[in-house]
Length: 201
Length: 409
Image (cartoon, rainbow over all chains, first blue to last red; front, side, top):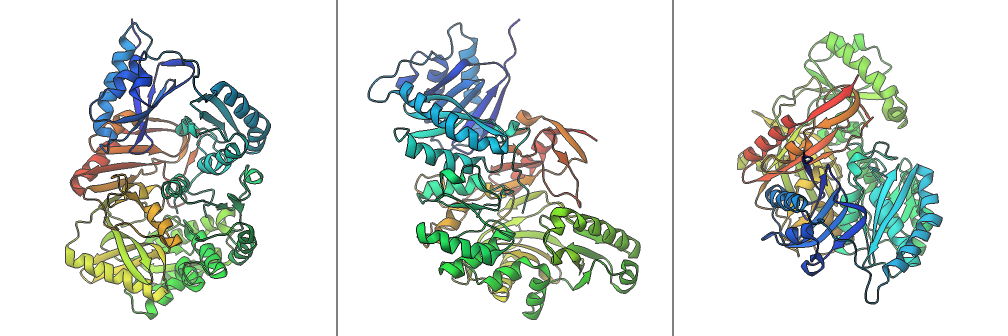
């Protein structure tokens, strides 16, 4: 009997939403799509880009998480269901929902960038965040965009955005200037031991 | 200035990116990456505003600062000291301090004849049984410094007052509460004002209060504890009364000497008109600001409260301060009981309720939840947007009913 697919939509804001599945979509690595052309050969991405009126500008697939970035101003409550249908349809097919990452082409060498970013994470970032029981995992580099996941004390930490934007982003802009952006694919709501916790004031 | 306990970190960091300004984040504890980005990360002693201002003065010689924003009660004072020292836009330090100190605030409001509850200042060390004989009931005991209605307790008779006093004394003896020093030795006894409560979110620009939103609080806040739940905007209070509420808040802003920046006020109204209950020189707390969107913005998505606050502090042109057409609301999820959180069920179902935009569970698995009045940390927030405030309220309550919190006592 086929596993029942459960999908939880977790809007980050009105433009970005994580769809968390109970089954893996892409085992190992990350795929990022920024245009319908890039989605060709990946039925899941093709279907989501094709949803009328959603105006998807970015799609990131990692493990059991699909992050959708849209330009439409419609609330996720209204447009989440077609995304769910697209995901279910793609997973029901015999074809892999997401094709493996193509080899890098053009001027950006993601493999070389990966090595440089990994070195910065290993030698500088992680020894520092470890002081708060945290860690930052490099998931992938695609089109010079770094995908990372935070863990330990960083996952769900009230200052995670500061660590990311004021710390890691600044370090990478100096040390690996070819990096064009950072995407945090952490499920911060699942952090069980955040270093800093918020309180209403 | 973003305390490590702030819910608003992501919102302010994102707002700075959106408007394209360089940010230096100051917190009371060092970031692990401070050494790697000394221009963007700074540690300040928020309990010592003058020292913090000195430190920023030195910092600014190398990294020029053009605006300063505090996001909570403590950092609003620090921001005022820094603004004064660096000659930046901000409140006078005496105004920021008056807004922070509940007793001083009430003295100044009373002097200016702003309608506020009768109040008395007492020391916790005084004999509660003796005080109980002399005060009027119902009353509310209130700490001077705690936030989010923590430690605020209504008492209807002498026995209830003595119990409330004992509970407050225990709360204020806890290390974090006691750390503020002398204010933790005192408390207020206030007249309980019956009535409907609203919250006013505003921006003061050159001494003039601009109302950004007026929120209804449809759940009665009659005590004995004062846990907030739902905020809805636009308010359904009649227009004439809204004008009176705004005037009351304007008088309070003038009385305290607030000249610039965000204000958040809690008011009640009854047959005697509006009453000012609290006023803070900071924006709305928690993650509640996520329900506010203004104008249409460059992208047509509207701008956030945080963008407006940063723009104002930097002297940039302000966008429209007119809130969007749709009604919006937020529920601070009530603390479900005392215990260690194991699991939250029904999240997907709650998010699937029509008009619900998001449900954010901010408590983490294994976290100890403490009910009011000892606790004050809500387990999460529910956000909704719709055509009418009543539709939004229905959606918030329906979403909340879908959630189940599993706790171990």
